[in-house]
Amino acid sequence: MSRYAVTNPATGETLSTYPQISDADLQQVIASAESAYRTWGRTSSIEERAAVVRKVGDLHSERREELAAIIVREMGKPIGDALGEVDFAADIYRYYADNAREFLADEKIELAEGSEGTAVMRTNPLGVLVGVMPWNFPYYQVARFAGPNIVVGNTIILKHASQCPESAAAIEQMFRDAGAPDGAYTNVYASSEQVATIIADPRVQGVSLTGSEGAGSAVAEVAGRHLKKVVLELGGSDPFILLSTDDMDATVESAVAARLDNSGQSCNAAKRFIVIDGLYDEFREKFTAKMLGVTPGDPLSEDSGYGPLSSLGAAEGLDEQVKRAAAQGATVTRSGERDGAFFPTAVLSDISPKADAFREEFFGPVASIYRVSSEDEAIEVANGTPFGLGSYLFTTDPEQAKRVADRIDAGMVYVNVVLADSPELPFGGVKRSGMGRELGRFGAGEFVNKKLIRIG
Image (cartoon, rainbow, N blue to C red; front, side, top):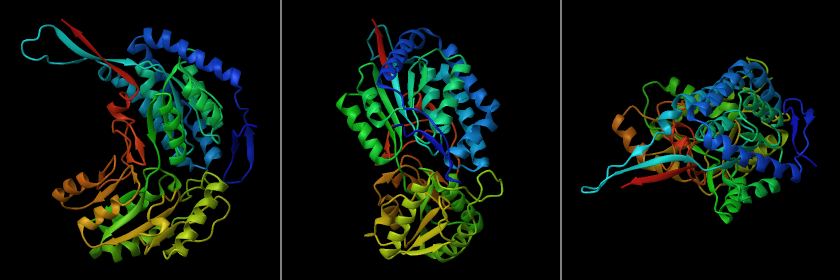
């Protein structure tokens, strides 16, 4: 039985269901993707592929209200955030269209003295790729995988989250409407077992997954067994380190914005707030008041502080985490009680290093605050987690900013700024937050054959 369904988390109503692909049809999809790679992917010009990707971006802009409404009902994203996500996805596609020629240009190698001839590194596509995408950013996540790889000449089989079948179909339709040939980009409503079949197929050359640690581990295991390239973007418990500030109110505003992005359901949202002793009491008081003053509401209303969590199950799981944190000694301050998938803001403090909450990721509007006595202790707490995706550092000392940023074990460090993601900035983490990079120039270089051509 298929698990693909649109269930509005704000109401609990199942609005539509979609059938799972059959094994026979899945084989046809793989064959079509491989055929498209051998023909269009290898024979079309960079300009032709870039034109398709640019048109996909333009179609996102043209259909933004329709696309935004889809993800409001699929995963409860507030309408303002939904429109912003569609716009960001459009910008990503256009970024790769604009920069395709530069990113794929031959790179000359200077030969050793006395050598004759030339040598270049040429960027060729790998072939058929499979993408396994999450529910929290249905358009953005696909854009940062599909945009660069279609430009490169790879072809894509896309397995979206089971609660996002409508947005998944809408993306595939935009690729078709943009002129992508059959097999260049195909959406499949596949099971986990069928995804493993795709990865194992010798016609498939790589897999990109954004999701949980468990899903990443399962995909990487199958990919490793079959020697396939993997890019993983997994969870995060990003630190927000506050060492000094000349405007506490503005810093608190940034901290709250960084925690409540996407209703708190962002992998690289700030989740652990690590504050130097001299600023801790003031920050805790103002941050807690600001957090608890934001309440969830109708995701279609511009006046709502944030929307429901993505599902009833997500809200129940987060509730269990918070209650367990309290049972293990943490001080919990909440703005109310859970109402279905609508979750109240909460702030945790006095968390023991032995508690589960010290290491877990809270995926929702829950923040943790830690008091530290020094720069070294701040770094120790920041790095004391299995995750290493993003991080935030606030300081008025430029030298301290450079020093601390270098010591944080994360794939990204943002200094004195939040919500600053952009198409040109590489995205990715270390440790249990994954491997590989998306976006920017690096995002166009993950699934490629960097081929040496040496002419004597």
